[in-house]
Image 1 (cartoon, one colour):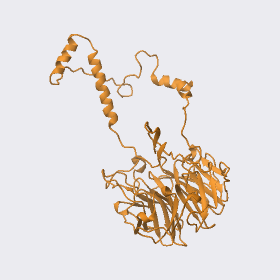
Image 2 (cartoon, rainbow, N blue to C red):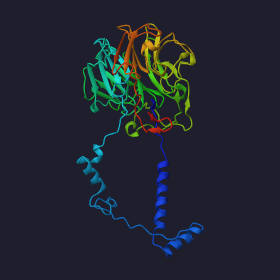
Image 3 (cartoon, rainbow, N blue to C red):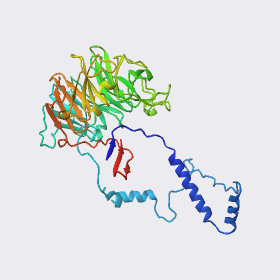
Image 4 (cartoon, helix red, strand yellow):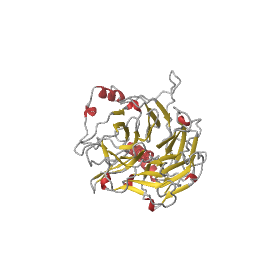
Length: 468
């Protein structure tokens, strides 16, 4: 089975309309050919031999208005049936008919949590992980260490279920004072959800904030009480009040061609030097000035909301990068500098973390199976000052990274092998983790299926193709 773990758009298609018209044409031909024989058919055949011409017009009956003033419509009733199709379907469902009882021949499904982001609560000695596969937030003891022979480590608490409004959550932040958990939903539920630190089970969030579609990374400036979110589909960074709720508008928006935001994912802020760092996958497109927004029903009257309407043919692919801005950057502002090039080793750079004391930037390098560490002053095609990488590290598609300054540790959330791994703060090279927390068996790969749309079968290779 082959999978592609990259969010795919759904282009508008005209093929369905063309197919319908073609079917109607064939049906019309069948009706004409199988109609009354002799003279009518001969007239039609003679007419078809020459140029097309109008033979006759049969007006439709005049619609009759109902009691409510609406025009009456034909009943949805088969000619020889005593009940409607809708009623038959409903009856089948309520009586447990054949279709509801059918079971799939087999199922392709990952039964274990796939960790996408990680954060540590040093006050309560807990580590929190988001699960983008089963849609849960899992809380473990910080010192948990899954034995090699064990299938998994049981979490202390778990938040999950329909009431939580958790889906494809890939960004995570823990309030250092209250311990509240902020989880960013990326693909379907356009809502930032905040839970009390003691929350567990299928509980509603204590607070919600409606966010632009496709948010990924989160960072908070506690001193200024501002919340930063990256928005990958529309190449933007939005800034809210930290206490914003429901339909409140952002207070700032960073978006435009000059920003060089290209499918932004991770974000980290350096309050000491008043800088903002953003990781970019490299996909971009121009926006139409004054264009439309996503979900106009939810964005009407909002300020500082990302424009969604694209300029056709403007899409391009650039190398992955990290762009650096002033912390209060807004509008179509170019970056102060850009880290980009083959020496950087970046390949889908995801979440970021800042060590302001040492002047270091940590990058979760997803497709490189590594944690890259750069100087915060790096620019251009700069090599990392060191990297955590190699088979001993157990790093596999790390999308999350967190720097625990209280305990001098660096955490990684590995989307590719059901694990979270932790290293010494100054780790470098092919080092073994200090501890591993696993949600599945050792070396059990994840399927990588997330938000699948259509599927296809490759008969030559006997493979199922699953775009995500």
